[in-house]
Structures are given as C-alpha cells and as structure tokens.
Image (cartoon, rainbow, N blue to C red; front, side, top):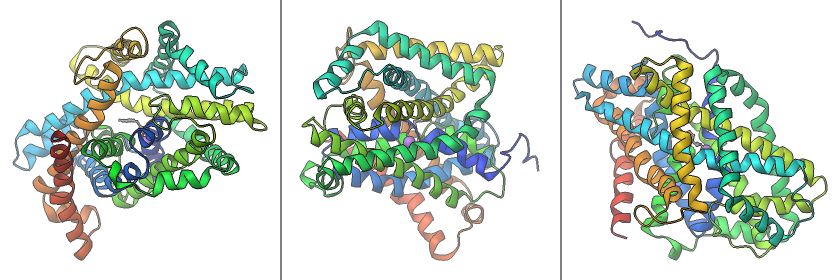
Length: 448
Ligand code: PFF
Ligand code: NA
C-alpha cells in the first residue's frame, strides 16, 4: 500500500498542535463573543454547544478520516476515494467548495487580524491607559472610520501570513503554539478573574448560561451552527488536508475530543472575560464585530499591570489569528500551485494578493462602502455570514454524508475503534442526526 506517500506528523503532539493552531483563533474570542452578544446570550451558547457536539465532532472526525485515507489534497482525495468506492467523482466538489470558502474567509479574517495588530501597537504606546468607555469607543471608531489605516493593518497582517507560508516556516509557528496557547489561556483566566471583581460576574453567568428561549429563532440557530463550523475550521478541507499527514496510530475520536474541548473552552473563557466588562460599563452586548475592541481595552486600561497584560493579550491574539490564517491560505496556495506553472512562492504571492484585494472591499464596509450588496448585507457581513452559515455547513455535510453513506461501514468502525453500541451511535449520528440537523437548520431559517 502506498499509504506513506507523503511525510507524516513527527508526533501526535505535532498534529494536535497544528489542528488546534488552526482551530483556535479570532473565531473563539472575537467572533464567538460578538455572536453571543448579538444573538441574545445563553440560547445561542447552548445551541452552539449542541452543534459542536452533535455536528462538529462527527464532521471533524469525517474530515480527518477522508484526508488520512485519501492521502491527497481535499479535491483529489474526495474524487479518488469516491471512485474507489464506486461513487461519482463529483464528490470532489466538496473539496472545491472548501477552497472557495477558505479564500473568502481569509479576506475578512485578515481585516480583523489587522485590528488585533493595531491594538497590539496601541497597547505598546499606551493608547488605552486610563481611558473610559467613551474614550475606548472613540479610539475604535477612529480606526474603523479610517480606510487608509485599516488598509495598512490589513496589509501588514497579510504580509505576515504570506511571508510565513512562502518561507514554509509553518511548522516553527506551530511549535511556538506550544507556549503561546497556554499563555493565552492564562491571560483569559486573568481577565475572567478581573471580571469577577466587577460585581457583574453573576449577571454574566446568567446571560451566557440561563437561556431565555424566547430569544431563539431560525436565525439564531443558523448563526450558532455556522459558528460551530467556523471555530473548528470545518467545511474548508483544511482538516482534511491535515488528516492526510496523519499516521495510522492516531486515534481520531480521542484527538477530536481534545481539540474540541480546547477550542470550546477558550471560547467560553472569552465570553466570561468580556461580558462582565460589558455589563459593568453599561455597554451594549450587541455591539457587533467591534465588541472585544471596545471592552477589553477598558479592563486593561483600569487594572494594575494592565498595560503589559493588554500588550501580551493582543500579541497572543494576533499570534492565534496568524496560525489560523496560515491554515486558511494553505489550501488556496495549493490550488494555485497545482493548476498553474507557478512556483510555491509565486503561488503564495498570487493567492495572498487575491485575498488582499477582496479584503480591501471588506474593510471599506466600515467606512466608505457600507451599502448592502447582497441579502441586505454589506461586503464584510456578507462574507462573514454567507461563508459560515451556508458554505461551511454544506461542505461539512458533504464530508459526513460521504463517510457515513459511501464508505464501508465496517472499515470505518475499525478505523475509529468503535464496536457495539458506540458504533451504532456513530452510525446513526453520521447517517441521520448530523445531516438532518444541518438540513433542518437550513429549512428552519429559510422560513424565517
Ligand atoms: N477556526 C479559526 C478560528 O476560530 O479563528 C478560523 C478558521 C481557521 C476558520 C481556518 C476556518 C479555517 F479553515
Ligand atoms: Na476556533
């Protein structure tokens, strides 16, 4: 068997680091908290947790399994596995839609990565020290209202991403994650501790975990499901690509559980850190994408050692954003490299440039081009919403349906070390619960 066609992860640890490096990013801190605030708190959080467990886990395992069996990039892996198992090569569309999604997502992800970079510098020069809520809001509005400044930071972030991918130093970055990720967790814990001193921690717990089900709507559920895909880097073929480097000895289910617990834990910590600041300062939870940028600087500006903590926090956030962004650029580069005569460096530059240009359109949504372009959404909101709510779930659905319906049941059970009742459960979840869950969410939200 030509199973070992390309290099494998030197260790299980290396794989877990790469997968968590991709998963943990702006999605956990920036996106999770703004969506919780926008969608009424606990009802969103609980549906999100359910989506992670019922849909996210099986899709993650399915993507890794496809990648490990296919030993190729997602498009070729899907088409080869499909024809080997007597199914149409059109399954490759699942891989292709992933490349499109990665391209679209990176364009706006980089804009937010730029905000994080800008706030890192802001912390260094003491922009936030001693500021009140109005001051912090004015600083943020100043950034948003200045397209030149946004362009500068978006460009800086993309240059970093392209440089890292072109130099192929991704691995080095991943081993740095070994230190950076725990550090990020520690800082979040410090912030949660600060939140406890505000007197609004109880309110935060109630907001995040005591559901007001009347806040639930098709739209909230769709947002929660989209976030589950986004945060776990699913539906983009990225986890499939990682799976192709995965040794036979790595246990998929156990590893998926580890990655999911880390990712979910960091998101929940971010919420517990941010909402006390929101409530203590009378801010609006439904501030939207700016939420962490108008809350966290307030905490840093008003706590002892806050200047240094703020700097460290935004540095770590930028770092987490970078490890996710390189995983987003990777499939785009691979695609360009395979279909053009470009070298790797040229392919990275070309892919990066295309992403950068689309990112410019996205950042103009905050100032000179706020008008709706589709479904009543401006470019930024359209990219953010359309990818996470439609493209990712559809592609992820393709992966789980393929594994559960098109691959041999026994061999999948063997590969996942499942037997008896747990195998039965996997089979039912993979075949019916997860796919129908996604479809129901779609239908439900279409009907309003
Ligand atoms: N999962 C990342 C986050 O939560 O920030 C974002 C992301 C990275 C999404 C890679 C998709 C992806 F392929
Ligand atoms: Na994430």
